[in-house]
Image (cartoon, rainbow, N blue to C red; front, side, top):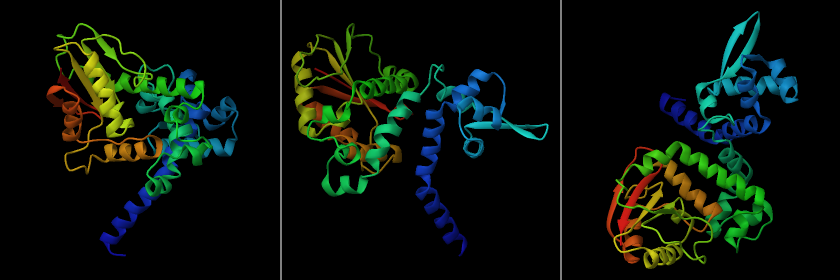
Length: 298
């Protein structure tokens, strides 16, 4: 093949094998690899890791070396053997004691999101979530499908807390919110439950779960309850105005297809939703992170 064809094939190979990379990450977290290395306080041999995890020596060695290639681990060689320790990435995000740990979100991605994505083609054909195929759970009641058990719901909620441990400061400092003494971060069944009185309502990764009609219904409820001069802060991963990119946001939008009723939206689409509910003075701030902030007032 010519160089252009070689490059194209390499890209195709990278795309087609990406699921293997995520499974290496998920398996290492599930087995407790990064916590074991963190607690050891010193680099460990493959044999010591296998003993600590109760895993096969052969499988453990393969997993360790692959994690090293992915820069999840570092390797030192001494006395004719390899010794492994966590990389900076793993220490920051993959150990349960780290303040920026992402273990619960990764567990949710592994146990819930990944099985749904196995049915992406069906989701595209049908235009609906794939919990019935992935788990045998009817998708008609989205809340029941998403929160299949109390443990699953708790894992998801802790995962969201972990995400905001990384991104929260950027989105909450995007605007000066000092004029809002009482702030309410909305969660739960906000379509039916009474909304508490507040000066500012925060919807973080909420609107992307729902259709335009359901979003309009929720925003109208918030506008009705919101005090005059109060506001709403929407935090989402926002598409460019042409809808093509960033890639991460496009992938999130496909995830909404396989798991929820919703999709990611452009700034103009969020502005229309908020304006139709009665909110004014729409402003958006790019944070430079995965999630951006949008503010509007009553």
